[in-house]
Image (cartoon, rainbow, N blue to C red; front, top):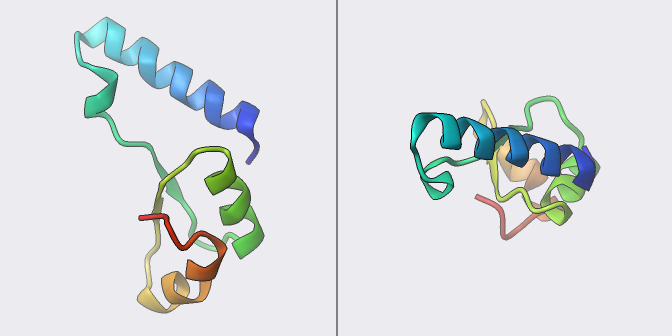
Length: 71
């Protein structure tokens, strides 16, 4: 994932919000980080992603160092 991908996803969210009359701040982008190496999480965090989804606490704990300020 790079910054261009994140920008494109956020642009799609903004268009969907425009079509439905929602405010973009009502939508949370959550990156699925299951089976993703810590380096990819670090890259996504640097690109502006804050929220990540994991299935298991152990995986979350192992990846926390990659983006300690992530949710």
